[in-house]
Image (cartoon, rainbow, N blue to C red):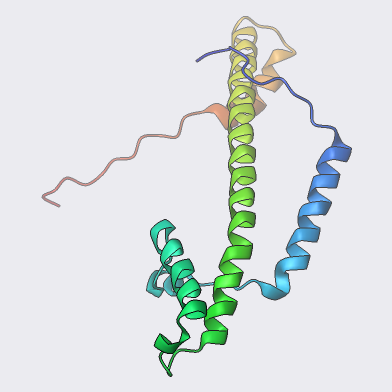
Length: 160
């Protein structure tokens, strides 16, 4: 358990409020255009990846330069709309993913350091309570509920 402090920041509440408001504005602006999927729907879809993005863009170019090969059963208008949505939203998705990852990493690091400090404080109250410091006992008793390890489970043997 390290007490090495890797992060020491204070984010002003007005910055958090502004970011929250701006993210909500983004969500509201895009809401009419976004489509949520169930896990089953996501699993069933034919997925577009890095390699297929280039393929779709190449097909778009050929549709414009060689329209004679467009099958009659292909809805060119819908294809172009779908390609434009991917082209427009993909950079936003990348930015949102980067932001989410940076937020998650910062929360993880700060949370880890806060938990380590909490454990140190708990250890100090436990030690003080064991030495008879009267004011430490209620603090220790309260915190003990959060730091007590859960009992080990017993699992039935294979023969049962």
